[in-house]
Image 1 (cartoon, one colour):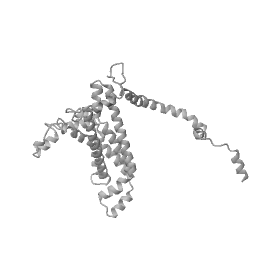
Image 2 (cartoon, rainbow, N blue to C red):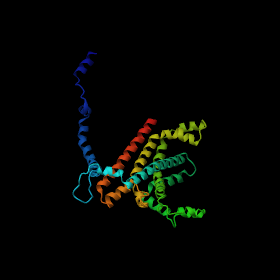
Image 3 (cartoon, rainbow, N blue to C red):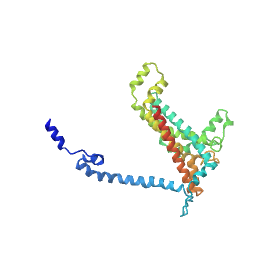
Image 4 (cartoon, rainbow, N blue to C red):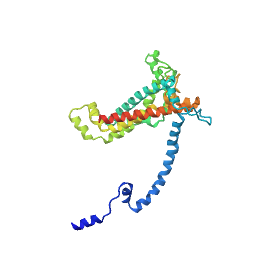
Length: 316
């Protein structure tokens, strides 16, 4: 007892903070720190140069009236942001973005979840359906847009040919040229393209589901829908939240498929904030106002994603 007391009295007090944290490490471990920093530095520098600095520069430009060419950049304060409120095109683009985010988030996640459950349940032809459902993920959105542009072609497109074949010629139209259908026609193509990503993530997450709970629910008489809703989906809730959040953010930043299929037209029928930002900054030479629109997209994306994640956490 006296020996233990003497040893504890001679032991130096443990340091707190960083000194205490790294003080217990071996000399070899401390010597490896510079090498670790050396390996991390290139990636960190690339991230700072190509991500952080352009983002900060865009924030600065959003408070100027720079035209993208002139050397001078006059500071105009919040003028660009106030201008959005009275800009009819910006308001229409925002309205279209809201529609896109709502439908373009719910639909592909729901479709991808159903496809993943269908394949995971071991139905006949699972290998064929797995390949079929995975196909949209492999194709770039630009290719998806070109394929669906052909499908919607007013003369030889599959949609109009099918309508003509069943005697519904009156419904045939130029789907991408009609202001009433252009946005939704592109949205259907985007939903098909995004469903592949949702299927891939959710199908992988289903591999961690506890089979015994599903078997117990089956013995208790639960049907397929009840097992999926009450047993399977709660076990993949984190992955489902992640997929929904990524799709939600992508909905506000959508650009490529709309630019390929309609360019935001006809008129402003399918215009969204990203396409309007591109036209404003690079076609109308209003880089300052375009930067403000880009910041609006960023804020909307992160705020909506934050709110969604917080609501999901409260429901748990």
